[in-house]
Length: 371
Image (cartoon, rainbow, N blue to C red):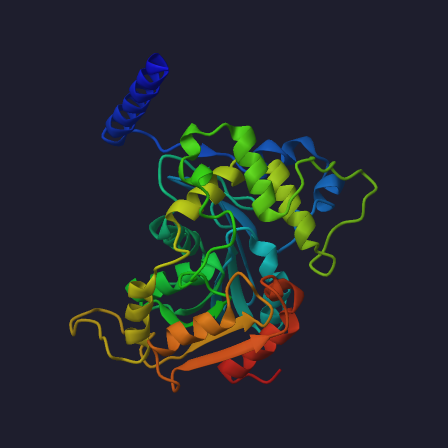
């Protein structure tokens, strides 16, 4: 027994020392776990890829941006002179969750950009860096920097930032530090102020995942997400292509669980470091820019676009992950009714995909655009 304890302590000290040393080793490259773009698609025909629960050609304007943290999947399309909108998905649903919404915006001559969050969809999983708000916010800069169009500076007219769930919290933190880039912010079932995380998110096994066998972690993650441990087969050559109209979210989540080798790491690391709760400071700061209580320095070279704007928040009436009542109470203490627009729609946490019609109506109302 004593020898076992000594071995464990020694192992822990070695692990801690190694972690300390690696963190201070200069010029250490940040590694990444590749997404299905590299591990799966090369082995499929075009017909098979088009029939995946998340086909790589589901949305127009796809590009894969090489970064210090791995490859980032970005979609960008719509009229070049259209009003710009950037969308950030959540912790389990990649870009297709915005598919129908984006199509409706482009039909109204908007220029749309969507990213796959790190470790989700076709974006790689960064290693050796925490999945915190800093990492998620960097996605925005990598995405807009890779665009052929100007998204920043005086030659840009700014953009609207839309975030869902984890993406909502990321959007508010980004707005709190870069209010001169953003015209307005829209949040769909936003994380960041959640009082109680879903069951399993705070598991001790996730907190100590470095010491837990992969099999046990995978079993727990499947339970948390409601996915199966049995890998789903790949589509046949004769399978029908998937479109935004036939998108099946549970099938997409299962595919991601099965075939994105870095998803488990990204998800678990997000539960430990991500901006899911206790983000009140950044939210207050963003709100103070919205209602003009906080201003940029007088000599700042670009105007504060966010100043004098409004914040639109949409929640699902039956959402048990992000509870509408809790969000409204928290934000009402940060922003006055003249700057806060709060709406509810039918649906659970998946309402952006399953009730996109109601969501887009609130968007157009918010922007003063005829539906």
